[in-house]
Figure 1: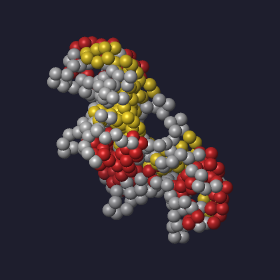
Figure 2 (figure 1 turned 90 degrees about the horizontal axis):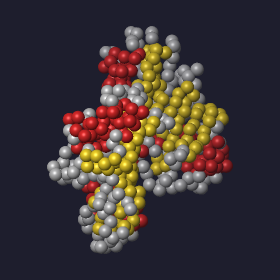
Figure 3 (figure 1 turned 90 degrees about the vertical axis):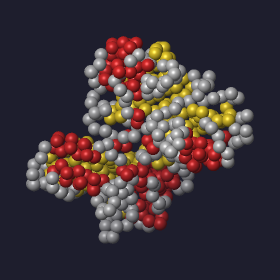
Length: 245
Length: 245
């Protein structure tokens, strides 16, 4: 059966996250609704990153299997007619047999945008967290460095019954952009629930001088969610890229 | 009587423009409502640029006169508590006697953001016009060059009974940014209604090869709104800066 890959971008502001959920507006719900209209039969999608409510995507990847072969370019145009500009199919292509957007993915990259200036930028209010105090990106980078490698991230994940919390983080660093925004880019083979937003909250505490970055390894080792510093708001977070073999 | 100047930024998406208008949500309405709460008496504001519905501001300037002196920093904090992040007071200061945000202004600068890529960016859907076809910024710049100088812009303005349409444009040019966006920056002593959006529509016609840039001076000379090419959508437009002596 042919498998198709859809590369998606979306503004998560108006959605209760990716995952379809009866009675609420979700990205998966909208995408599968549109696919059903275009294909004239329902399909189930699989996704690389199950983003939370308010979280955006630049390079999300979904896949689905269908009995009937289809024209990828035409499907892309039809989806964009129905969904853009809130949800955009950046590309549609036939995928190799056995491709599964979630299981085949080798790495995910998220970005988090923080504005530590005195007042927020109204036109970025849905994509940037205006924290309201200045941060030192040097301290934030020292905190972030402790995430790199294979660790049990139990202290930085919302517990899911029976789910493992060991993850391999490949890179994590903050940079201050020319406009003044402070941006985290973090790449891992996979993430657990609320992991990036918990990392951001911890780094921001270090960045404002309330936490010694040297304490971060101990917080990881404690495997105690109470040792973390909560979660940063969702709207600063974007699933940036997913890598496949 | 002391005069105060408020530097404002706002996301115009949720407003029917600047100007207060009974029964509709406007920026002026929200700002004067907030001022009345903080000052405990109503004030009337004057503004440098009466932006249309959906148009944003980065550096809008408003002023008002009041009998009672006030603490500008405290007023800024109070306004931001009530209005941010949709509308933000970037600064509040006492202004020289006789200052009037509209009459004292010497020049206004607007920016218009255009995305000519194949698909829109969902997170920029409220601030960038995704036109859906590629444009040549060289041709757009040749068209824009014809706007510079003192001209009667009757063909590029929505007629307002009894209002003059002669304006002095100080600079007008498009640049392609590293991310691919094409941005117009246009500076004039003043603008008439829908002038920038009419300029953008004309430039875009030149940029897609449907209009010879050499025809632009003739379109201006015709003083005929029918010779123009309509107006570009409001959401790509931002009042960027206002200059005072």
